[in-house]
Amino acid sequence: MSLCDESALTLSRMLRSGEISSRKLTESALKRIQERDPVLNAFITTTTEEALEASDQSDQRLRQGKAASPLDGIPVAVKDNICTRGVRTTSASAILRNYVPPYDATVIERLKRDGAVIVGKTNLDQFGMGSSTENSVFGATKNPHDPEFVPGGSSGGSAAAVAAGEAVLALGSDTGGSLRLPAAYCGVVGFKPTYGRVSRYGLMSYASSLDQIGALGRRVEDCAMLLGTLCGYDPRDSTSADVQVPDFLQSLDKGVRGLRIGLPEEYFIEGLAPGIRARIEGAVRILEGEGAEILEVSLPHTRYAISAYYLIAAAEASSNLARLDGVRYGYRSPSGSDLTEMYEATRGEGFSLEVKRRVMLGSYVLSAGYYEAYYLKAQKVRRLVKEDFDGVFEKVDCLLTPVSPSPPFRPGEKVDDPLQMYLVDVYTSPLNMSGLPGMSLPCGWVDGLPVGLQIIGRAFDEATILRVAHAYQEAGDVTAGPRH
Image: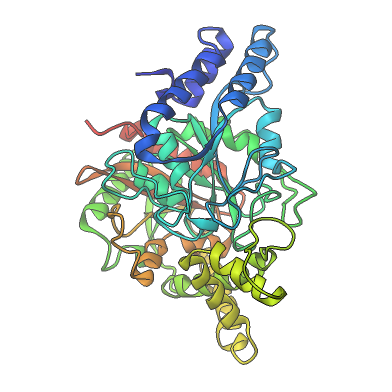
């Protein structure tokens, strides 16, 4: 096992004790990128020189006993829709292929403040629009456990990088499952915090009321450590919540005895792959054996969530992506004899088919005569979905569900059938509609590929999710490593 394969918390302790150096750890991750990324294609841009310089600075602090945080010296990968000053940020699109931001996103400022070593920017579906990381102008990312399958999306590059040891931790974003789905497909831990818990300043907006930056790691404690850096109020983000951030590591060892855990009946219906159902039921038995009380609950409006989600997300995308017109920044088409033709050519050449599809759908549902029939109705459904969760959380402390109804699929299998691709998010999108925190946790294998368990919690109660996840991780001994 190389250094880059260890857990973040273990590496943090080794760094602070002087057992290893950040330089050696960073070189281990960069070497792994050289070895595996030609096949996996998890990275769009690597920042070798910057990473080595940051690791040397970290080593100097560590030698002086002045570690900036538990994260000091740890290699981290960043999804390429999060702005990094002086390093291109493309959102995997042609229209921003060479865009270099003049500023850092708040989460990047916090990573640097806490001494993290950023090793590069990871691949994604363009602007976060996809569930397979096939929709990238830089080519598709492969699943580290079997390159014949997709890694999930849209944060597939980040999840693949962590699973392959190309980074110890990673940042992703989650609009309808874009962090939890690839975590499940790649067999790592992925955490989407409560909406507003992590600043979105510097995140390239897809759907502003749904987007949330989150954490990816190999173990529960790794994500808890990274969340400690990412979370917190930011006055530059109007949706940032001024809510106290607990020490997430402190709650991990409390166990689940006495906790009430709900199983929503709507998540265990026809369409769920039998192998996944069996793995989830096995996880439930383990937690029940650890002392949790298991209750069956109902979320009746869940069946409408995926349809409403795609209407709202598309509407917000059509508004957010209007800024990409070839005038202020990004690609500008040389075609067109006037301004209107230049707009059309720039967006036609710069956006992929999937991005165009969602922008057109969003523009349609916001147009006169259709707004009330589609967009307004979708917002009403969103409210009903949230009220379902509010009611259930009066009875239980958290919920357990699958992450995806099916295991990882092969590249090209769903690209030509957008509805089938969209249905991959059926279990994850309700959380974004409600703003709730959720986590994907490895819970076994089906046909040689990982399965993810989703844990859903109350708003701003990430600590309970981490507590339950850690109890299962320790009792179930399911890690992000290769199957045995």
